[in-house]
Image (cartoon, rainbow, N blue to C red):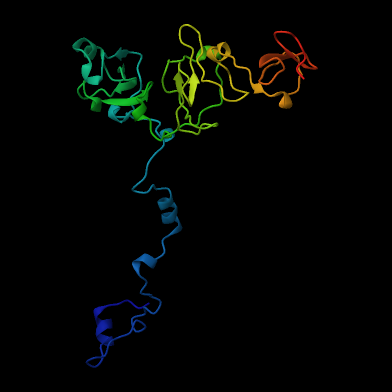
Length: 271
């Protein structure tokens, strides 16, 4: 490459408007590469690879020396504990004097707090809430609105009868439906559960069918069913009683002996 001097440049100067080329100047190997595309040396690349990004962080294992600002360290629970008679705001002057950074304060709502070391000792903002050992029901998040009853049973001793009143299921049908009510009643009341009062007696209505329970009054006023001789029922089993309206010798009470109907007054067979 020739030395570029003033005489050399003057020698290259041609007519007006004539511009020397890079070949005229011996610069034919020069390329107009952008700065971003210019290569760097291997040594420079190796040096840059050992550098950290301007924005980066470190794990605890990377810190092997130096002094850390105490404000950057987490607040850990200490052995000193204080129990408030109410919320944080209820801490007494004596209790506040015992509180230092890391002191655990338990409040009456079951919450436990750690004092951060800064701020008023009666302000919740000066503490870190670490646990709630007995949270209020309203404070529990994501709880179901209803709970399926767990299968269980009861012994009679578990059931206390409240007297006449609502017991929980509906009456009015042979099989009560959900949501209806059955009442306890000492009287012979329809759609109710019989309830024995203090005397232990049980009241029922007058029977109207063979399967019905009877009453004392019904038994005391026992009335035999009337029959004519032509339509007497079977005399079995023995011991049945009827009233025969047209028996020989006059109407009478008759009893069965398992074979015949007999008059109660003479034991004569009714025929």
